[in-house]
Length: 232
Image (cartoon, rainbow, N blue to C red; front, side, top):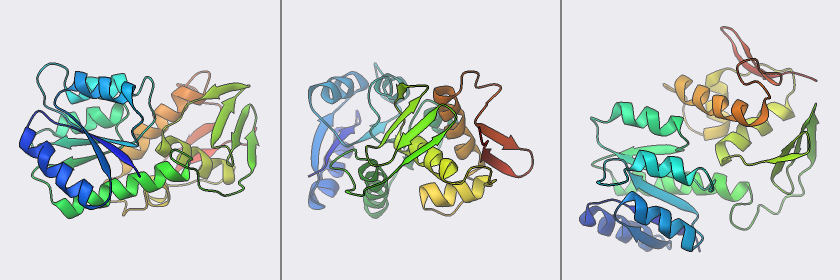
């Protein structure tokens, strides 16, 4: 059973999300501000976090940044339509997706299931059971059976989306993928307006695997076309 941490200062929203999620067989943990969310994530294992942005005290943006220091579980932000800048900021600091209020229960469940599928495929819950194989390029080694990545022998912690982007590029060294192709293959969604989202996650990935992210050795941009994994 998957455990989902729901955090919002509006208790009615938390209650509604609890009903949606438990009806689908998920276990929920409730929090009503960012600090409570951090404490809950530390005290017990969770598989996904639904996090409101605008909360008193520790808001959702700062809580997401703190969570990303230790946790790679998917984080979906709950946002108001007027919080477009916060959506971008949230993605920049490590959120995986966002849902705009007022939300449709069907959309919430669909987004949750989508993120959990990716998380499970990376061994986040019980592992995929696939044999996988070791992919290497230069100092990068990705063990798809263990769902682990090392760079020059050092373990690197990637989010599910970062891992899947790296896996895609390592499987196809030298091949150029447009941002639309990367989005459709990794997110499994239509790529409308995906350019900035892909760029943000690739920037985070570079920060974790490149010695000098500003002058990347591995993940190269091909201007006007997209990105590729440089053969080392």
